[in-house]
Image (tube, rainbow, N blue to C red; front, side, top):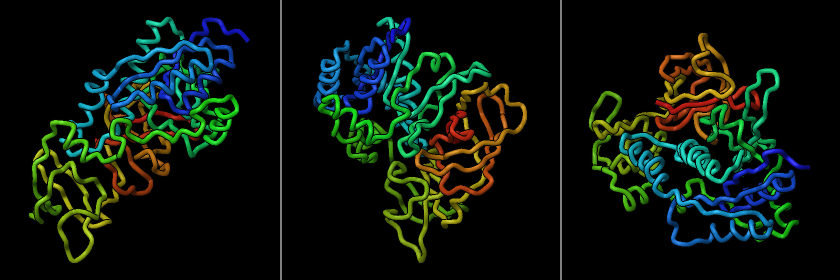
Amino acid sequence: MKIENNRVLLGMSGGVDSSVAAYLLKKQGYDVVGVHMKLWDSGDNKHINDAKKVCDSLGIEFHVVDLQNEFKNKVIKNFVREYEMGRTPNPCVFCNKNIKFGDLFKKADELNCKYISTGHYALCLKNEETGRYEIHRADNDHKDQTYVLYNLTQDKLARTLFPIGHYDKPRIREIAKEIGLEVHNKPDSQDICFIPDQDYERFLREKTNIKSDKGHFVDSEGNDLGEHKGIISYTIGQRKGLGVTFGKPKYVIDINGKDNTIVLGDNEDLFKNELEASNVNFIPFSIDEVKDKIVYDAKIRYSAKPARVTITNLGDDKINVVFDEPQRAITKGQSIVFYDGDILVGGGIIE
């Protein structure tokens, strides 16, 4: 089939998901332009070379776009700043908002592409009744990546394609093997692309100018419980590796960047049933339309199970969220993301 205005820019990491996405888009009749975003100097060009080989194999156009400065300023600096404040950010959320679905659209315009596409496991569908675009969970819930896509807007969704959302990973690898792509057995990428060993503390201490002085553990009443080695070394809910011992297990229940203290408490202190979130974006409707309380399911981190919540609009893109059941280790800086069944409703940053 021939699609009118069918030129699509595809972000290609060099992995199997985006590679098969290129094949599927071409099969559907799109004029595919592969683009590898260079975000971080990994010391080799393996991913670039893999992406180029796939494009050569499929006979599609290929470009490398250097976004290292943009990535540093919009993702890395935020990552460091959040840790200095005692928060735990999710850099993938900021990357998708500002880079993959921000700067990539600028490149699409430069290359005269009507659409952009990625290898995310998600679905973008238009609701014919409302006339608005919706993001739906991938058919395979295990690989679903909608959690990091809640910042997408209607104008961007109108130009967005997610070609692998109906497939599971084994089938994607099978397709890659069937069409002769060498990346068919390439390992999955790590959670954080710029920290290959996932050692956040080492990265922050060695690769950034982060300020992380020693400070004090305190209890909920402010009593001194000993010295900590720097707030970047701890996360909410942590029990092991505190460096201090007590007669019973103690957990990190709060991290305060302002006075450089870490609050320790009991496991039950980690359970909360309420939070506030900022920088909220809703996809099927505008946050300004929320006049009354609304009820959805929510996830307080990527791997969390959905929990029923009631949302109240506080204004200025802020909301109050009350859970039906208390949640363990709600963490400042992480995203809370809302669902209506399989539909991604939106999300925001936990404050």
